Length: 247
Image (cartoon, rainbow, N blue to C red; front, side, top):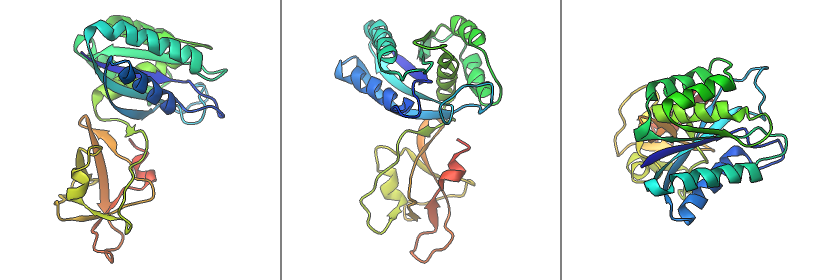
C-alpha cells in the first residue's frame, strides 16, 4: 500500500529540525524492512501571530510503499519516535494516510491549501482526519502539530507543493552542466523553465550555490530561468532561493 507520513512541530531553535526527524523515521522504516520510502518534501504553512512555530512553520512529508501488515507497526514506531525524540516544548503531530483508502482526498488537499492562508484548529483537523480515514495523533505539548501534519499530507497528496529536502550536489568544477546530465540523475525527474519555455538536452545550465528541486505533478522538478549572461555558454541558470519560496 502507498502511504504518506507527515510530521510537524517537533523542534526548537537548538534541536535538529523536523526534516532531520523525518529522515530518521524513513531510515528506520527501511532498516526494519517494512517498505521503501520516497523523497521528503517541505511544505510552507501560514506565518501568523496566532500560530506557534519555531522558525518557518513548515511541515515535512514523505511517501512510502509498505505491505499492509506493517501499517500499524509504522504508526506505532513513528508515534513512539516523536514522543521520544521531539524537542522539549515542541508540540509534535503525526499524520499517516493510506493513499488508496482515502475517503475525502479532495478535502484533505483543500485543508493543506487552506493552512497556507488561514489559521486552522485542532478540532477541524481531527474532524477531517476522522472523515478521511487517516491516522492523526499528537505526541507532546499542546499537540498543535497535528494541524501542520495533516496539512503536509494534503499538500503532498496534491503533488504540486513543496521543496524537496536537502540540496543537490554536483562534481562539475565549472558549475555548468547539460540538461541531459541533469535529467539522467536519480534525484531529478524533470527540468523545466519557470516561464514554460522549452529546454533541450543539449542546453547548458549554470548551477547556483544551493540547487533544489520542487514538487510539481508529483515529480522532483528542477526549475531554471534565463541566465543573466551567456558568457559561459549556458543559456539557463538554476532558480535562486528567493524564487523557490513560492513552492
